[in-house]
Length: 465
Image (tube, rainbow, N blue to C red; front, side):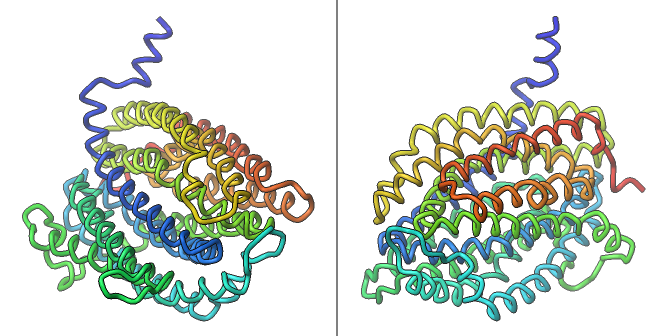
């Protein structure tokens, strides 16, 4: 009897999983293709040696802070977007998109200024002696060249996130997926041409990789904007988007109060992860290269729990906006269980392929061995990542951004980062056990997430009049 009760609580019927996968799979495919092409991009750059691969990896880690800041900013407004749509309020949805676009311009201006002023200083933070191979000066030069071009693509990236997140809040996940697929195909083809110099083009190395990425971002933005504004009957929120400002002072204040903690959470969290990787880099360029290889393949597999987490925010947020609190709680229980079960399978697959992937790279045997071990640590951690991520999106769906700030960002800065700093600076623990310890403490975050979700602190309708 107890088993039947658990099954009813955590296992849905066929219609439930069809609904969840209808939202999650397009996000999964888009992110999966993006990460897969990013992996191919990484492999192409990696053919030029450890230094070029490490320089690009360091810059991408720094740009990751900007990406997460944009994601947090649009997601903060998106809390209201999902609930406005669930409530049938298209004008409110338009206002949230206007807020996202204005915020994107501000974040891009600030981010570009910082990266231009401190490019070499930021990259140098990750460059340390202590490896069997690797030229630090060459790595720095590759990184500076790559960043100079990548900065051009920050604004189209931010605008794409604003549009795509709004479309997903309305349940439209196919168009962002197709735009993302088109972009990564453009990126892949141009990588082949520009990195190695095919079809009469000059071989530009890391600069070619950056040019390909920037062009693909403009392509993605063009597709998603054109489709949105050509289908105004479907996307009523897009009518008058640039000609009539519908944002009210009250809504802006609400988004700032409820949503901006989410942006600062993502900003501080990504900065924490960047500093965490800087701690790993203190074990030398071998560690930098191995972390890059490990994270590249892990990102391909992580699309499962990331997409399911995003689906929690969308589906549960819509139910909260519609006033279906009981349905929101039931749906959330089943979606969290599904995310964890899915990542048990994903973790097994990742563990199995761990020794194969590093062999593709033109690097040393030491780097390959370290990378394979790091991939297996990540594989074992997948179910933990899934639970923590789903818990985060659950709390966020009800606008509890203050709690998510402590849960997500607070954990990194108070627990994970001090642990990594102590291990990096006060011990001689090698990179693999150091990385494993930093992943294992995620169990603490899972426990906190379980308590917060179980207490129903997140069940709240934000858009009711």
